[in-house]
Length: 253
Image (tube, rainbow, N blue to C red):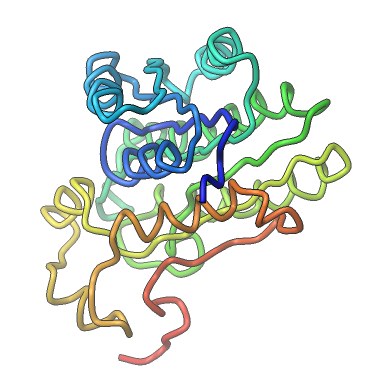
């Protein structure tokens, strides 16, 4: 099945990790994909790899925390492909620190990228989609629903994304713009490896706490995004899909 054949998809923060796998998964299903990173070099590198596999991919560098650059990303995508059908707000960062010690710089960096950037991306895509319809997918986290210490900025942003997703879904439903969120738990990515250095946990802690007793994979997250991007999800909007191995459902030790 080519579930995204003929569709144009933008995936922010797609030069590595979950975003890179989403971009590749969408391309496998027939989409034309825009790969995005703040770094032009990283975007080019990922796009080159996917082009070598025969996919129609374009790299566009943009910092989603800056409104003008979010707007530019949409404008350049439309210039290149003539439309946008799917916009995935995946770009995100983390800063782990005790809340009494979390710096203003780190707080603003996380909120600006993880929440404000999602709004700017959604707004830019929504302005284009308002006469055509489309699907917007926002990457939140299990920490948008439950919390652990030392993630004040990250959890605040991820909680905010869930609220933002619901507002946009009900506001834009009449325009046939579907807005949903995907909430991964612990996925094996470079971000997780960095977080373990300051987050006070290791692989065994995650495996013990997760009912399915393992980390998730980037492909498992990408497959849920693929469903939400496709016409199979045509009656799905305002929803949050946990990809968490049962983490949020489990309330025990």
